[in-house]
Image (tube, rainbow, N blue to C red; front, side, top):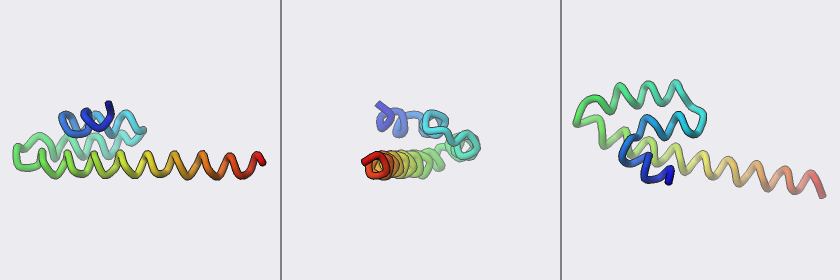
Length: 66
């Protein structure tokens, strides 16, 4: 769901992952038609980094608990 959101409305994806300043910058970039494509690519990249960070966080917390 977030991936579709990152492609269609890139700035909203940043707000859903807790990065409001990046969301505002992305919105400014997205306002121009030429800037929409880089904004979408940036949002998809940020979303993948967010998912990777969550996986690492879960793995470290599971390791600490055992």
